[in-house]
Image (cartoon, rainbow, N blue to C red; front, side, top):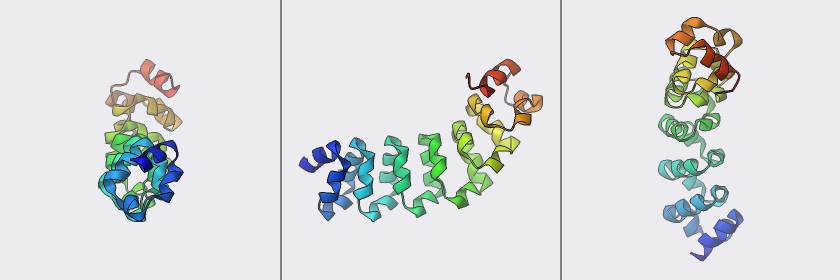
Length: 171
């Protein structure tokens, strides 16, 4: 409890904890709730733990920077992370970001992740349409010609005045 309080004051305190605490998932889950930056001092094996890292991501997306490459390449983990926060897609592995089916699944979960996907996917009208269904404000990240496409706007039932507001970031 003393170390937990110390970690709450400063994540640096975890570096002085014994190795048993740095691998103790119950302790670390509590420490990460108090300060996600404590993860940097946790044992490397913890950064591979699906459930613990997902809890950490729900507290702060910055913890994904410390997640293992294997987790950042894990489709189920990254989709769960995106569901918790659309910005998490920025931390997905290159192989996942190159996979259109993964990107489509992500924008279907959280349309807001559209603004963080690679530029080439923002040209994909199906991805844009799926993102717009969840979050009309992503229209401002679409290519200019797509912003006024009546077929696209009609498909997602976004009337022109609302589309204009969304494209301007007013929605």
